[in-house]
Amino acid sequence: MRTFKVSDELYEQLKSFVVDPFDDTPEIVIGRLVEIVNKAKGRWSPFDEDPQDSPESAEARRKNQECPEEEPVVVL
Image 1 (cartoon, rainbow, N blue to C red):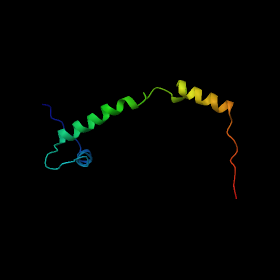
Image 2: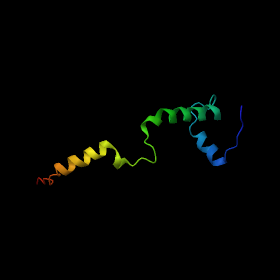
Image 3: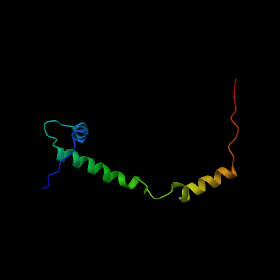
Image 4: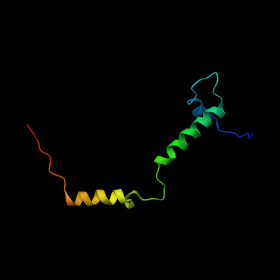
């Protein structure tokens, strides 16, 4: 088992994630956060990828150019 130090500020933030104060240890809280990150990884895009370069963005731009937005209608 490894031991590491965290700042008081980070420790206070970790305490805010405690669900059961009688059973949750720092290791359990960190493990829960790691699980959340692992589940969310599939939803993240890489930092170096430009969202405008994706095929979906190109298709959306093409549709917007073909069908310009209509002017809003004001009803009184």
